[in-house]
Amino acid sequence: MTDPTRPPAPQLPPDADLRRMVHFSAGDGRIWLAGQRMVLVHTAALGALRREFMSTLGREHTRRLLMRAGYASGERDAALARQVRGDASVLDMFAVGPQLHALEGAVQVTPETCEIDIAAGRFNGTFRWDHSWEVETHVRDFGPQDEPVCWMLLGYASGYTSAFMGRPTLFKEVACAACGHASCRIEGRVLADWPDAEAMAADYAADSMIVRLEDLQAQVDTLRSRLQPADELGELVGRSKAFDAAARLLSKAAATQVTVLLTGETGVGKERFARALHAMSPRADKPFVAVNCAALPAELIESELFGAEKGAFTGAGAARPGRFERADGGTLMLDELGELPLTAQAKLLRVLQQGEIERLGGTQARKVDVRVVAATNVDLEAAVASGRFRSDLMYRLNVYPIRIPPLRERVDDIEPLAEHLLNRFGALHGKRVPGFTDRALDAMRGYPWPGNVRELENLIERGVILASAGEPVDVHELFPTLPEQRPPLTVNAHGELERGAPSCGPALYDDLLARGMSLDQLEDALIQEAVQRAGGNLAGAARALGLTRAQLSYRLQRVHDRAKE
Image (tube, rainbow, N blue to C red):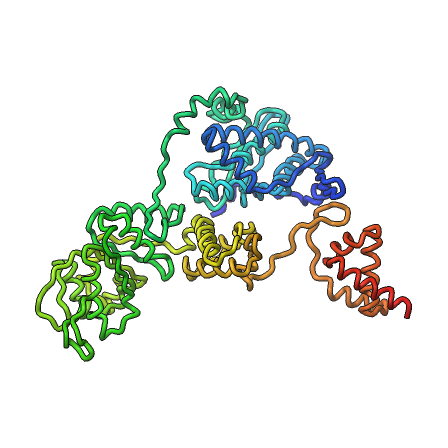
């Protein structure tokens, strides 16, 4: 509910004045922001630097180092505020920082509150951050976090505001998307107004990393373990909190003999979890047998599970052991358990309670030592209520349930899963694919995945097949029917950023009719203009038109031929 006494959130002014200050000088390979040289850097490169710092300096020193780097960047941008908007209101002048932060590709900033009185030395502001580059790169490398990770961004906000106010004014990150929040959120005050001002100021005090290397040696030598239950097909892949919770339950059950019930939607990987449970258990050197109860005809399922004696039914020419006997000493996975007929359910209950099976058509009870792992995507309580599943069996199976969350609840697992599958299918199809584009990763993170991991598997295999060798998989190779996004910010002929223009087909068509130009005349004019602007350089003109040099030469010859006619 909105607080009526709270002032409305301040609105950022238009940023056209800032966009006009960004110039791309392609001729000499430099980018300028109001006279300051800028550099476009891959976030992957910054992420690699961050990883290097984390592994050599440790988390705390890396945090402080990146905060100081961000602080210096913020101080530089603060000098632009009065230069660009010297006649504007204080709030509009201050907005230069948040808007430059977004324009530079760091984060989208939305003010919630902002009270500034430079003369009195008062500042109180809260801001929401979306699409933080630091969250994306940090979570990509280290998984979900318990503490905020937007260190450079936080330093930038503190450095900018301190320079703008003319006195130390620092921010805290009170919510972070890396910790599971919907957005990041920061609060800023003049340093003296913070109760822990001394500790906050210490984060920006320069110190020598070399002097502290000896203190970090113990951390470097410390063993860090990660839960990676594996079977012959490789480790379970995931790092989200939901995945870790399920994997921890699996690990605790592995050393015991408890019957495990795996639940979850179709395609979440229940068999992979069952195989991992077997591989971690003392039964790992014994058979793992999986049976899909839904794939077996009702009249054959009992003989498949429990075996049959000779003559037990038409066609039973010899005695045959069932899946329980084949899995003796090991693990039996009963997939799609909710589809098991009631008669087979009664026999299964006896196996679980007494460890005995009786072959179809037989009279002798046989002891079996089998660890049962049941899996279903059916609501067993609803099946019991409708009379399709025995309540006593459900209670027996429900001793140790593990819910495997759907992929849409495990967004942090999508990228490591995709990379794992990319390596597998690249090897299978003998094709080297270096990874995914940022657009492809963003599309995967935003997709709801109704088919879960199985659907992801199919899409990655298709992407490997469609991608060019040596090139990363792009979004259209994974999602060919994905609708086009709105035009992005592009660079115009003057080196300024502007929104890409919408389709000019109707206006161009009307202009051609008004001028009385034919299609050949339009092509001739475009080609001649491209060659002229390229100073006669055919290769440059061809690139500008999206042609090869040979294609441009052919079209130029046609221009000359038409001129002679």
